[in-house]
Length: 588
Image (cartoon, rainbow, N blue to C red; front, side, top):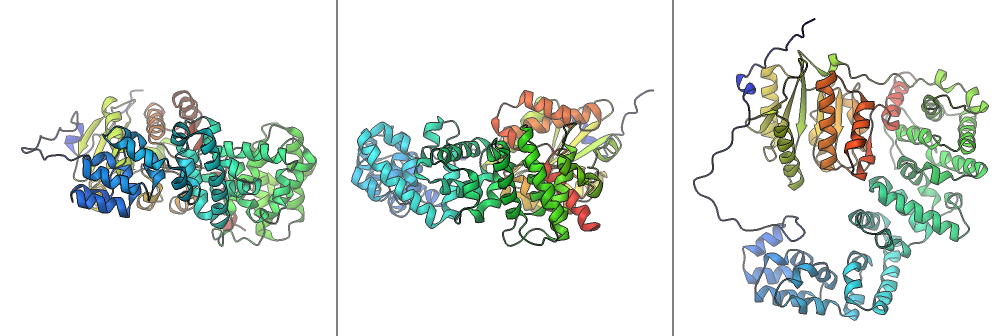
């Protein structure tokens, strides 16, 4: 049978070959560099100093020496150098952080030498973190003995700061570990030598889900080594007065990060006791299916997902111990919503056994029969295409990463032969026809703001186009803007931002039948581009999305280790648990 070609779009210009090139302006403005040596843009204080002369920079060096040193390459000359010499007294570690910039300018070596005064550095340790942030420079420039003495003081300061304000210090330590992703592990995790096992446990509990996978892995490994040296185990911390209040968050971080095997070890009896303590921490009170968790309690769907993930172990004896403990907890649970959470976790685990035997106690509870997970949505051609056209809404935002991602989007699709059309505040990308199918992506132009979005929606309404896929290409703090783009007809939502997983509940409330592809922690522009390109290929080739094919292709093409943070939507525990919990709310 001959393939029916879809009708053309209403706007004739959408069949044009390419985006028109803008004409060069008649007068070219003189450009002043405003990017600092770390390739990040200069902030307002630096810009004010840049255009305010030497006196303005001297004031910046006094009031904000960290920014003065970070952007010192923008301020050549003797007067700024004199201001930097004075600023060393206020911020010697910031001066060392700018050592590469300073060493490249006349007189910069003297500034570095002033910063290396051990007494000044010791007095400036503050939280201890500045030492670890500049340790690589210190190691090159001070004696081993001086480095050892300085590190001993920094370790004490860090431990005290973390104990005093863990909510403030934890994320800062996490950022440092993630920024050192390419450093040798001995350097990257040097900071952990200052922390006790209890400190490490708390650090993982508080920031584990936000860390790069390799950072979380390193912290878990170091905690295990440290506990072994102390002849203790994670079960001891689970029962400790200081650490027990953090057990639920620790469990979610470690199991959600794929380290359940490290958590439970190889001793079935100890594993079962730890599972018992963890369930008690995760299910401490009556839960209501109609509302998300409050007062710091984990979301019920998150708990369901991690309990199921915890049992998905290769060690048969340990898996059996965990199955028996969940079954016992389920059998004895009196409160209905808590029983339902345990039951849904059992059902989710049962679907993954794939022929592997479960224990008799687990089988006796007949989880699948009693607690249906419901069928996950299917992305059929009918849901994704209308008249042979798949429409996607892609959001970009006006910040450096957003602008870079937008340029990458244009470059990638132009190279693949897509037609690109500039409109007022947005761009339309139209794929070549394949098998009678085309993709139309309506993408924001960074900087166009709400007006550009309104124009995009007005244009789609005139064209009779409704997006079936919504893609967020921005930081997590822009997610509210994209959330407004999601509606009941949305079939797939792609959260490419950091921690997109936290948006699952809100997404499914707006689009109950959507699949959600989200990151567990870190989103990466290059990974987003490749993964979205693979999805586009599958849409054009098959008219739907075969997740087996997408993930096989993605693993072959994406070498970035951070791809592990992207959760396959048809197998993601949290995705499945949110739907099951919603069914529980509707039919308690």
